[in-house]
Length: 431
Image (cartoon, rainbow, N blue to C red; front, side):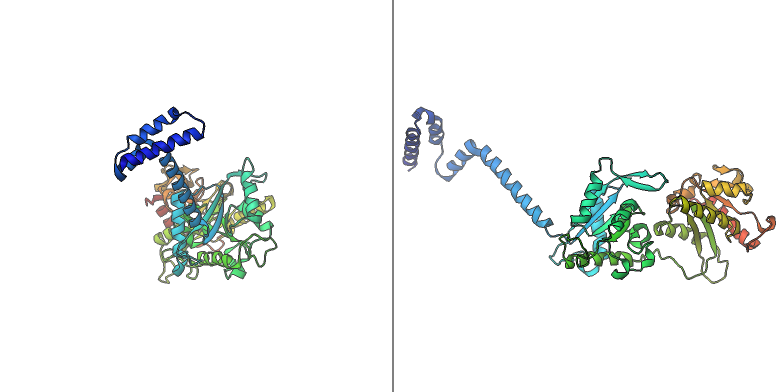
């Protein structure tokens, strides 16, 4: 049987050669290969493997590649959420996975599977830009080649993303386009926002969750207006928009059990901070937690509560002048005795003779300045959570005792003694 099949195959090859006008010798190699084939199925497989393995492998790789591509396209074709980040931070694969896990925990029973297809998928477009400052010293972002800005504008007009995490400069651009959903319409407290549309991610408790915590605290989270209310048709359905709204609402509503700011209990102690950097909730929480730990129950209500009172110096020239005046007024007439001041505020307090000499036990510490202050970044305190986010070149200093000033402005000797105790505790704090 084997000889008969080989004979028939050889005859076929000869006939093919004659039909193509080639010499039988041209097919001799093929005939010899076939004649060497072993008997049965095993022989056929050996024949194929020896003489045709490379073409088969190449075709196999191509087929596998096509199958994988189709599978990947199918797995991402219907994401539950589409989000965009624009800013200096690049989110790597690990952080995106962490963000996905945090979203799943925030979304409750649906666990991120808003569309109910049995899988949680989200698209995360991050456009990385660098920090610059404009002529007034206001920080903004811009891409040298302008490609990021162009992509950002395209995404606003025709993209799939609905939930945005934007650097303030880009947030102002989105706000100017009049495409954002008002917080009040979403059922989110507008008091969380400076303008009723976006919330600094650092002011939300969810900022402590993995993935979210890697974004800069000043990044503003906001939601694209519903397609039913938007003049621009961007290809998203109202149903998909509802998924994003649900997540945004969950983010705003999230409350950390370990980090609840107590706004009802009267403060036993207040530290006054003046600086360029905004104090977001993510900074205020750990700063005040340490104040709570170190303060006494001065008012006898059974609760120890320390508060960070702050004025942030930011905005255009006119606003900056107004804030500068507010800082100076607070230093002179405020009720606080312990200050943490940036260079401008410190220079004013020093010039006006408002500051008390350092306690003898602190005067020899590294970072002591002018005999009245300690540089924040010279203290172990600066390495603790929250305090590390404050301006490094800040000065920890005390107001003169009421008895030494012409006006007390409501400060008492007891207030001064409490502040002095806190001053020493913060200066010596080791973590």
